[in-house]
Every structure is written in structure tokens, then in C-alpha cells.
Image (cartoon, rainbow, N blue to C red; front, side):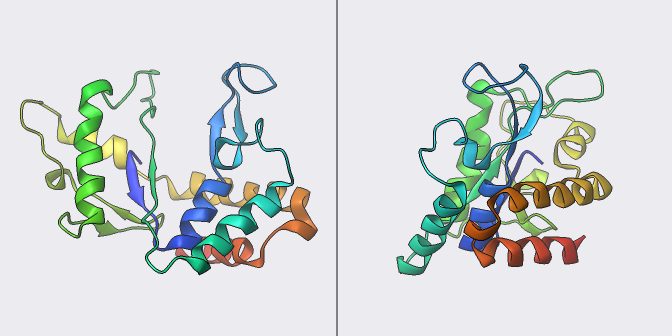
Length: 178
């Protein structure tokens, strides 16, 4: 989906840890291939990613008022390869919803991945945005998500002894929601 909020801190760490992105010039491999890139840090992290995840889990335990964690995908495409979201200054509509969510002013609906806005929860002033396009932008293909979630196991096996148990727990919670 375009945007969603994690259920809690550990869920947000899990979402970041299992992030997939297309390869760019900053990462090894053929450009445009989808790969697991935890928190988009794999090419840059100087130590074991399991320890990196553990750091974020521990940080959450120390914080009295944890910030809310959001996931945004500005680059979702339709079946013709065209971007569904216009981007650029229109991103402010989503960022406004995020800011309003953090202050308890914006509404959201609960889904398998977290809390998401309904179309009417964003300010559409000055932009014609068809309902069908919004639905495509926010659609979750549960079968594809199930397959992606199973692929998280590949990353977790690489980190085995370093992987925080909280990551396994969050994965099981996601599987149960599917």
C-alpha cells in the first residue's frame, strides 16, 4: 500500500527489517531487481544486521514515548508499469496524514500490515484522484504477501544466531493475520 502505520514499535522494526527494494547503483547486483534490504541499510551497515535489529528493539524498550513508525511506498506501479501515485508535491498529502496520526487527529483502519488511511482521511483539495486508482494503490494481495512473508525466512536463516526473537514473533503474528 501507499502508506501504513505499524501496530507497535517491534512491528515497525520488523517492517523495516524485512523491507524489499529494487537494486540501485548504491547496491550490488543488476539494477531494478527486488531484494531484501533491511531498513535499506544492507550496503551501508558495518556490522551484523541481526545485531542492528537488536539495537532497535532495545532502543524501543528504553524509550518511554516511542515514535510511531510508518511505511511509505511512493513507487507502486500498475500493470502497465505506470506509477499509481503522482509523487512530488502530492506526497505532502500523505505526510500530513502521518503527522496528524502522530498527534491523534487522523483516522485509520486496521489491516493485516498495520493502520492505513481511507481515501477520505487524506486532503484531496485541488487533485482529482479516481477511487479505482486509490483502491489499486492501497490493495494488498494477501497471497503475494503470504509468499513474501515466507521469503523473510531466507533473511532470518542468514542471521540465525544473531536474530532477535522478537523478529520471529512479529513474523508469526503477520502469518496469523493472513
